Length: 119
Image 1 (cartoon, rainbow, N blue to C red):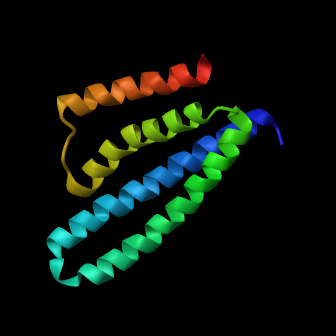
Image 2: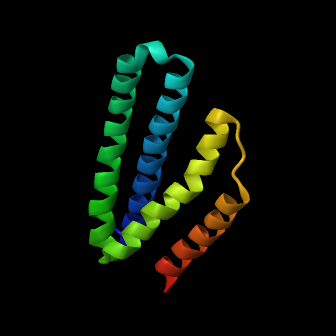
């Protein structure tokens, strides 16, 4: 497989995996706060969803390390995916905007991923 394509697939697996994990965490928190009488049902549903994200993340890390040959790049990709996706999902689920600090963190995270990939 083309090395650049492998890198792109690894990036996508990590991004999708992190997105699903964050969605499960935030949705579980909201569902429990709205409907706190069914904690076990919410937990099991979110556990199954987060298990899928774990599989995608594991595949992304394995494929990413084999193509990038550097675990630090994979770690930065994962952390930056969280920085990018978390405010989007938080707004989508809770309808809350990120604070100034979160916006600054987002900008620095994007800069960090660009530096780690291209330098």
